[in-house]
Length: 166
Length: 106
Image 1 (cartoon, chains in turn blue, purple):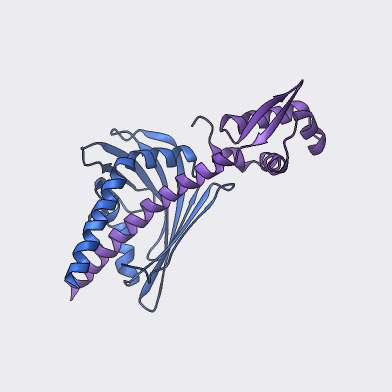
Image 2: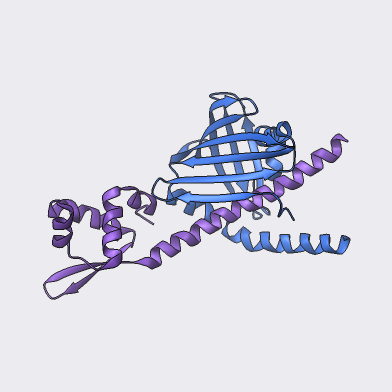
């Protein structure tokens, strides 16, 4: 589907750091908006069949995004992302932490550094996640587990529809 | 998982211990000698490594030998592959959202 767009994912276990690089076939300002505007973020942030629901989002230094990933059964998993630094259309940094529905953080969290650059109409997003813990990964993966089989089924259906169209 | 594997292997001494016993099982005393550390310091590190099942003790006569447990590392890689899968799914969805917005603009 998007095989021509580069995707790198590496984990430095000893440094507890995750590095993610991904290219997008769109101009920089559009990709920047997709990461920084609530109405676009909610359209893609949760892996299907989960839904991302942002309760509030203030994209400014010191501002926060409080959002939930909602399972098909209606279970909500809340998170807080605090914006610690913003250089428009170039970089922003967040501190991300799981939370309960009343905005009480469940420590520890992780620090994210997101870089954006454009070359010939292709935008590259580089994300570095520091201080990631296996505990957090487990929490996240467990939360998504039942959704995975459904995601794969959804993808199969999508691919089948696309090949029929061609 | 009570003990975080990332934290367990973030420590250089614990990484050195793992590298050592990956080749051959060692007793705590032999490790202490090898790293020029106290037996107590070695025991502390072994406790952390054992808590996340990266090493396994095996009694041999009066001595306890510690073995490396490669299965646990594989398990960790398996977990990380799932984490990668989540990102892949999200980004594929973003591709669709971006192309929809681009079409709307025209």
